[in-house]
Image (cartoon, rainbow over the protein chains, first blue to last red):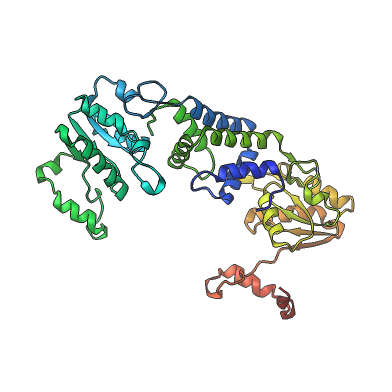
Length: 205
Length: 205
């Protein structure tokens, strides 16, 4: 792509470094900003820099937070002894949206993925083991995505805390509510039969 | 969407103001930046602010440029008397890529679109008429997209310069090179028959 301006080129190349954004989309976004009042651009730039320089992580669950302790961990009404293990903040937001969980979270910050150089040391696993070791946990709920990396991570954590005899669970896998059986993949359908629940339970929600 | 951090929320909301980017995509982009070194964010922010505050427009063709006159207008080898009228800089880049045009451009900055409050006064039309009036033009090539707004804009300019008896043309519309006839839309196919070219011409390229 030939640009008539170095400034334009730099802006497009910076935007195109974002994941899932190619040069054409980057150019479209940058030209859009050029047509807007200058405040739009400075506000956007400032919000990104503020986020990156001032953001904190909750010292308890590693969630993104403005304070030392996030709102969830600081809430005395929530049960700190039931901990849901998730990959990142998006999973926390998704689960919070359901309003079905009243415990704490523990954000690993990723999954074990040797191909991308992510081992246990790069994730917030040690602090989770520490919580279990200090007898602060009754139940761990594994809510990582069910991929090879997710299963590896679950298993790694499981081996570390197996000796402590706390309750371990994973979120249920099954057919989505409203989905047609015929379009479900075999593995999910198979699991939904293996892990079937008593009919009375299905009436509650 | 419930955010655990005001800083995160601000950043996501600013990014989500960009066209074609929803809140979910914005969150993904912002979380990506959070995982990168701080330089990435400051470079991106700086490039956008530099672009917006330092960018100039070529005084001749209104193209985005680092200087008072863009590279194309400043090039003495190009024919300033043949002017291609386009909507924005992306069209200039697309035509330049073909290496088939050696004239100048005139960037309107949009199309006449009363529904969105864009009239002739919001576009760089007066300076184009001025060029024609000062007898600086032999040929105008209309290369706006062939929509109702594009046709309206073409016609508006045409009415203003009709008296000057310069050569006027539009880029050819027809079946894309390599396309199957059966999948072409009727209007394009119809035009490609109406505006058929001598067979010898098709052998040249």
